Image (cartoon, rainbow, N blue to C red; front, top):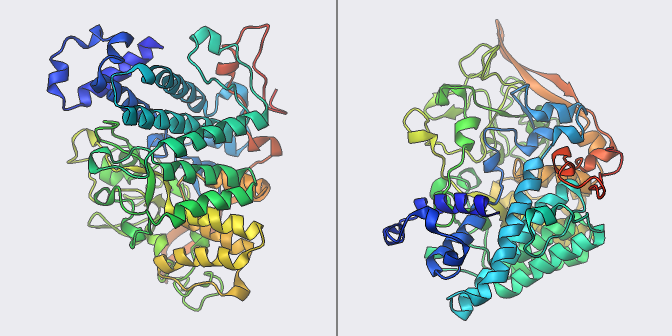
Length: 526
């Protein structure tokens, strides 16, 4: 534990602007006793836990979770996502093992904070806030673990590394109860907001927002609706008016963001690689543009008249990307897109979509969402990416509330909140007669694309066979004597079995347990 903590703490201290702290002595002289006697070091310790959160942006350079759903396909054939999509994986492939490892590093740090903060030289109010942060961050880590692997070993106190690998997986209901208890404690202890110097810290509303997401995934609709509406009714948040620029760095900490991971801030002091690895190779100069949206996702974006592409008179097969839901242009980089002063040519063999080798898109599309339109690796020092990553925003809370209310029979309330998002997007509302559960599912697909929830939505709806194991399509783009053509083609026919709703416990973790007390594997993964 100590080696892990102090190596990361040193980075946090190095990133800090506090020169007087650096003058107090060599960094390797700090030990745990020093930390808990120094309010500055304690604050850095808490910041280090925030830095340990794993988000979508931290997946930059590897495959995003959307690549194992109908959202996308990884352009890199060696990525593990291709094994998953064809069902060729098991415990020894250690899928998402980083979530398991990082979760318990996070839990250990949170447990240490909870045990030591009461005796720290801090005000009563600060002790309360830091305790709330510890409960929140521990709940978030365990939530990420639980959603991928199901029940887990509950570690709620500081143990040695050896002792940790004797704790068995708890019962499912106990895991759920534990996470909800942490979120409830966080909601009670955390403030509703912060001053500008503390932007990015967890609030009581963030705890309730995460609770609503977790409860919806457990099919506890009445409780999910209650938690979601509490956030909505707080009036602390509103929809950001422009979806296209919602994720741009100049709009960090906007009114829609309930909780995010702050990069290049005093809290985490980190950068990420999303822009570097998701932009076209033309802009980065090396093999990038990994996450390639599917035609399945493109087809989900309606025309600006609110009708699907195959039913709208606005659709033109020769110009398939015109007159779409404006969220499409904020999500998908397509042929003809004007990006960084260049017109993107997605025809095979072009500089944006080479026919072979690095930089080729298997689907005819690249990711646009989250990317900074001003980023240019040719002029940006060390390819640094700084924009914050939303963990949960008001739009998702609207959709949580809408789905929960639909399931409870209040379809008009559900329609009201779906239509709020369509109004923000600039497309017509759905009338009462045309509003179905499929309408709600569609809205989650296009609004929350690539935000890391699609896999869990599919599992909640029990649609794995169609949405995880179905056919993935792309667009074949060619120039002909009659003009440019866009032909839909099958990229891949994927594989799915019900056991895949949970990932196998990584063999790397099972091997850490003594032979006499093995860690139980998920069903059908032995």
